[in-house]
Image (cartoon, rainbow, N blue to C red; front, side):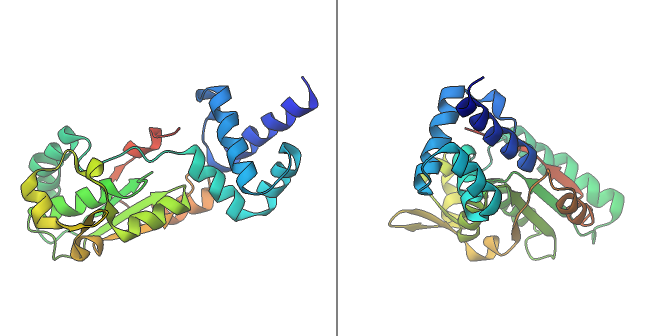
Length: 220
């Protein structure tokens, strides 16, 4: 193994150790292309210096993670899951725990927020929008978490949403659609690394009634 190949492998190993991402599942040439683009964007001349930058500069690391993970998601992406939540799971939770039970729902790997916002819309449709339920959306990528907080989406993110729901919960903008501020206010977004034990502990303390990891398989 050449010294240069060893450095590229060391970058992969560092990212995997910090995040839990399995980069071996990605085509090698594509992975190298993405890392090289991030390296050039950071203004670093070579992989050895880039590894050192990643180890010391959180912003460079966040930029690389944003490039390695693709938020492929859309509103009400898993129709069967949302039907089950609407007709079976959530009604059963209230039956077992009482009508005043406060739901705690965690969408891990939420990317740009479509899933937790879909859950917020679902709760509102069930007449629960005015109650203090806790909806959490978390993702490894800081840029997509920040994007989720804004609630701005293109038509492609709404491809599984009916015209009635769009007209009720979204406002047309010059660049797409903006989610109603009341629904946005129902969801809390956090940067969260599932590979970080301390971070996992803090989230476990919130004791979620419903947890979804549907977005965790979305990578490059």
